[in-house]
Length: 376
Ligand SMILES: Cc1ncc(COP(=O)(O)O)c(C=O)c1O
Image 1 (tube, rainbow, N blue to C red):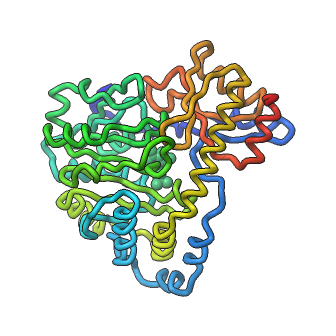
Image 2 (image 1 turned 180 degrees about the vertical axis):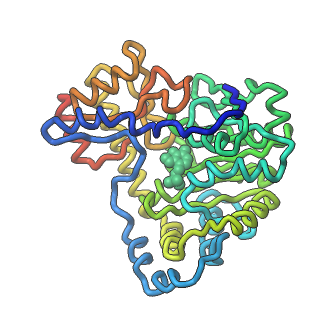
């Protein structure tokens, strides 16, 4: 799809609000709805994080304006985490804080366009997190959905030369939402270098991989790439809004400077919580195990309903083909029959039609309830 933006911008309906009628149907079952639509964490905030958040130094950090780029301690914690978890060495000057990552995902295109006015196009995977497209629209950029292959990985051979010429950036997401695919980041980085297109790699599920080690684009190169990371999923901190971006010294340096002027600042106490979260891996391992078990249980539930579901390569979503029934029909059937609320694949792009996405984000007893209802 190629959008030439010429008309007044009218925000589209917020996708998840379209599921309200199914939430009501699911809620009417005894025991209520089990909402597996939005990928919001359901487990407790790790104790190490909540303690840091309410500490005296955290409360004191609420007084002054926080550094927009992130405090020295925050940037040090990020740099150490990148080194420990992803074997990436990166100076603190090539990292910047963001207020969760959705704001940077939707904000980067307009800043890149200001920097390179001759270019106007955002490339993003045809089946992906909808905010890549929204970021292009908010920047009045052209958006070009790049087809994905049979394994839901971006197919870089499918991009027109003319679109490459005009591209400000290419988004890649690994492990991917919604399909959990692991991208070939070496190839993607090389494509970006060869075509002189900035590659932005959204790595918010990086530690949730099920049969491989976590991979970052920063392991391939720092030149011409940016990795975007979030603490929302790994540390059950979606409400704290802690994220960061890191990579190419010049691009990150530019973003850090503009964002100072925009007034984007990660609150001091959120930075303190982020430092504590990044310094601890134990809670991530516990969380990984929980998600893996829940995904396995959900696969069993779907199989008992006669629906084929397989473990993704990464992330905490099941991406399920609905060949014999239209996806909205399955969304309705699951809500009415077993009280499960799921997301239709079209929310992630036209190529996502004929699928549903199921987030393993309900507590074990709620998933058990689904199993009972499904007769597992
Ligand atoms: C692929 C992807 N990127 C980014 C985000 C944004 O996360 P946050 O804004 O909480 O950091 C999400 C949230 O679901 C996501 O799935």
